[in-house]
Image (tube, rainbow, N blue to C red):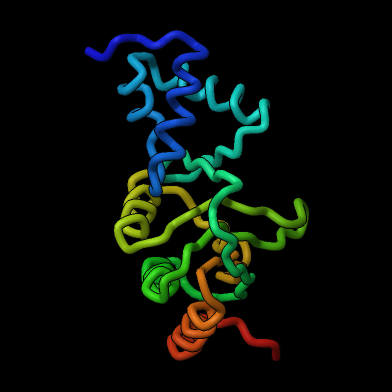
Length: 177
């Protein structure tokens, strides 16, 4: 069993582990590394976020965004598709070298609702879709007849343009009528 880390030591270790990884780390994995329960990790995350640490929770785990990361181009892309086309849509983005940062919808009562995603490759898309299926959760887009926005980011505008072209070919790109 891993030696239990005390609070400040554990939180410093969490920041170090998250900043060294380029993909999300689950709360369960952080708990295992720290020798504490997952609930303690959830509390640590709240404390670290309150202190201004750039930690984001996604369906795949926790991510740390340091200010030192290279600036990337971002764009909101409006799409519409059926729930069973979600994996194909996300594959289209990541195959063009993009990260899908989040998804948002315009809700009639609550206004804009946004969900963090941070998927950058097919493995992360597969984990997202598997988690979706396992939890039997609904997609935000199911509240809006499939209409939703994705904030995507990449190293170059041509990656975004390439994704838009592919989404248009597949009939996912939302166009004004």
